[in-house]
Length: 163
Image (tube, rainbow, N blue to C red):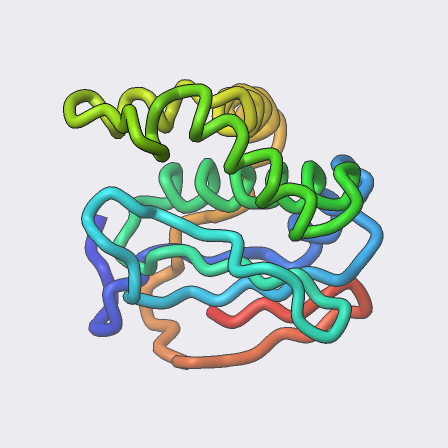
């Protein structure tokens, strides 16, 4: 697949994001930002909630499949945060899971940290649901050639998508 000059060879369809939000039962709006601020091991991140809107960032240098899986993964984290009662409660649960996996604390592990992180219950649930939901509804599609409008902003009552 040939990437455009901005590195993003895929696009996110707004209608599919709205369907995903409905499938997961997310109440608050979601803001998705496509950026290049991630490190080598991070493909996406839930940045929290600002002014009642969930903030998700995903890396622009992904394949369409990786982008879709990452977006589903982060949307599952949004659903987890809403069911937990907010970002603060989700962070507390994540801290407890990290301590139990010896990723934090005095007996912190030095080897296999990434494997231990990926096996945390919150991460396993997000990854499993993302795999299942991606096969039913891929969120990112290959960008058609000749379209070089960058960046454009699509708006929806449920959130904003920056691509």
